[in-house]
Image 1 (cartoon, rainbow, N blue to C red):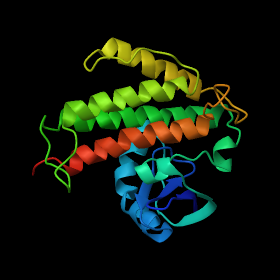
Image 2: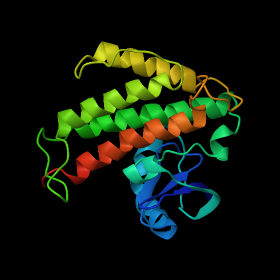
Image 3: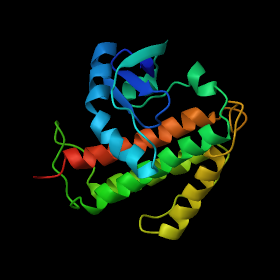
Length: 215
């Protein structure tokens, strides 16, 4: 069984696979979120392959922790730091988590390169086009980095040197062993949650690009 943590908001429920950062999906109920999570098994397999990590052959889930969500959950992000996020990470586990975050970025780059600049509108006629979405991801990562003790000015879209510097520093922090404490004091994030949140946001938009590309 694959361990999953769940946060239950008033409008949305997020299910996140504990040991696979970024494999997080939302639904209207716990059962719905787990069903969507299962449907993304094949998509996440590309991330594991990019990281060179052997992936699961099945997607039988076991909910090991469930907590009430908050406004962040209902807004559309996995916003709760759970007990599982505060578990210690040894050297091997930390490097594995960092490798999966790096793989999520690589998957995003691959998808973005194959995505047209203008995307099909979302269900209610909204949604960012490709470059605005990429700029949004970079902006979010700049903010997320501050919660693990890293301060960078937001790189401009296309400034690969600045973006590489930001992401290299993020990976250096995430790949270090941890006792599960917050990486910034006060009100920071522990490394397991940071890896999960960063990879989720990257993949959520990568997969959105795929879904909104005209075929």
